[in-house]
Image 1 (cartoon, rainbow, N blue to C red):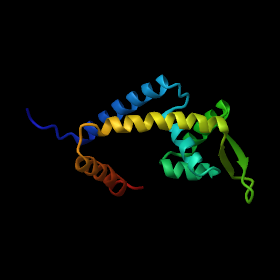
Image 2: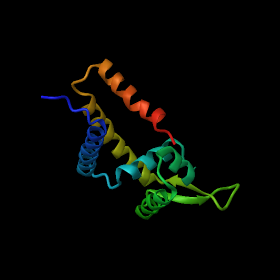
Image 3: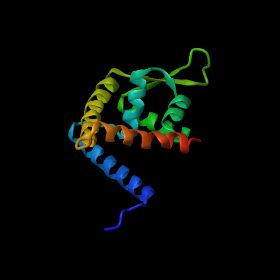
Image 4: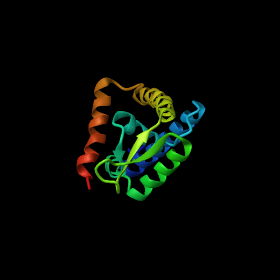
Length: 142
C-alpha cells in the first residue's frame, strides 16, 4: 500500500478526531465548557485578569470570537469582566471560583487524554512529534 503523503488532510482529520474524542470525554466527566472556553479558563487560572486582546493573541482567535466565548463563560458563572484600573475602556477577565472548579475538571481530562495520545510511542518519538508540531508555530506565524 502506498504511503499517504496528504499531510494537511491527515493533520486536519487527526485534529477533528481528537477534538471529537476530547469533547466526548469532557462531557462524560461533567465538564460544561467547550474546549475553547476551557482554554480561556486555563489561561485565566494561570494569570487572572487578562484582557480580551491578550486572550485572543495567545489563542490565535479573533476578538469577536473571544467576545462570544467570554459572554458564554460569564453567563455560566465561570468568568466575569472588570474594568481595567488604568483604562476603563478595557475589560479584565476574571475567573470565578466556579470557573476554577470547572477548569480543574477539564484539565484532569485533558491530562489523561494527553497520556493516551503518547501511549505506544517511545519518548524519542514523542519528542519528534512535538518538534514537528512546534515547527508549525514558526512556519505559519502571522
